[in-house]
Each structure stands twice: as C-alpha cells, then as structure tokens.
Length: 310
Image 1 (spheres, rainbow, N blue to C red):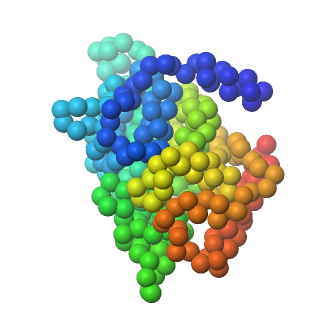
Image 2 (image 1 turned 45 degrees about the vertical axis):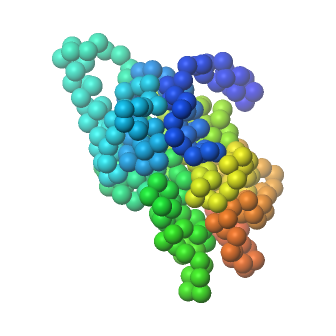
C-alpha cells in the first residue's frame, strides 16, 4: 500500500517549478529544497505569506524574485495573521462575485524564530479561530539569517553566537521547544513533521494539509550547513540521520490521532548525527548520553501514542 502511495505521489507531482532556480540560498540549503517541494505539491492556485528570514532574503532581492505564485513579505510576528486576512479577503471577493469561486490555498511560511518565538501569538490566535490555511515552519534551529543566534527551537547543547561554548556555558542550555505538540494542543485538524530528505513523505503531507478544511501545521526540519557547521553535500544525509536517530521523528496527527510514518527496529546512536556538525563538536560523552536518553524517552512516548490510536 505504501509503495502504491509513493508511486501515486510521484506521478501526480507537477514538473513545473513554482519556486524558481537562481535564488541566493547557501550551497546545500535544505530549506530551499523544502520550499521547492512544498511549492510543487501545492501548485499554481496558492498565495504565500512569508515572514522575514532566510527564504525572504534569498529569494526576493529587488528587482528579482524566485516565486512564481503570488507572494507577500510580512513581518516576523504577523505571518499567521496575514494568512488569516488573505483567506478572509478571498472569501469576501468570492461571495461578492468579484472573483470566481475556486480553491485557492493560503500558505503562511516562517522559520523557527518567526514561528516558535516571535510569531507564536498570531499563530495561536489563528489556530484558535480555526482559520483555513496551511502553516509551514522551516526549522533550521536558530536565527540563521541574522547571524546564527539561538531560538527556542535550538537543540540542547548546540553552539550559536548567543549560546556560546566556554568555561561558563556549553552551548544551548534549554531543550528544543516542541512546536508540533503546541499545535496539537490547539485541537486543529492536521499537524505533521517532515524533512526534505524524505521528499515523498513531505509531498504527501502537504497535499493532505491542502485537502483538510481548517488550519494545518507542518514542521519541516531544514538542515543549514552555514549555521550547523556541516558540509553542504551532507544536508540530505543529515536530515536522514535526524530521523534515524529519533531526534526528529516523522509523524502526523490527524484530528487528534497520532501516526508514526517512519519507524525503525532500532534507533541509530545520536553521535552518528552529531559527528558531522561543528555546532556539537564540544559535547562531552556525558552530554551525549543525556541527550540520547531524552531522545529515546520522547520517541517511546510518541510510539506509544501512535500504537494506542492506530
């Protein structure tokens, strides 16, 4: 059944590019790949509200743009609010017959800083109201565009310019904020995690989010060679290792029911993921063991939720 779904996803994925090549993203940027897959999955009838961040800066240097669909640059804090306004405006225009009735998908897109930190209040409000749009968080785990500062999505122990490594501190001091769980707590119809290293899974989830009425939230891990201090050619491998170690499990929550999309008989050691990233090179063996213990605990909780509701 899974094979059939994968073949169907490939066959129905348009060959057209709505996120054009020639943008200025860094070499090996997995975020650009994620956005390209999202754009291909959604097609032409879409309006994107994009927060300030890497994808805004690298894709729209005046007078050029990499976007081949209607696109609006918005501030860090109001991406979800603007998406709500777009959807309301479209509804009014269709009701007044100013434009024909048709399905136009509204997408809000922001990084982890614009989602988990600065934009959380607008996002929570839109979820509470039940506004019909897709929210895409491209999570590269720090404020990469402005100099690699920590966000609440930065993982424990990671080096950033504002979570330095030295005598008094060994990288990020807090654990990564669980944004998918926060979205689930709002009782919205659809929440999912995704990674461009698993492109078919990502495309299927975006297509499903577009079909389900009401708000949908997709949290995409986006490897950042610049901020992670990793080799550009390893971005796909690192995304896979994040999933294979249990650090970033791929799952979806549809109307409160959990489904673990990709599971493994045994998780790989987290050190296999860490060793390719300069931001973790200072970690002691004790810190690695502490991180792995927590990763395994959270993974088991997720597996139990998935089994209980399958």
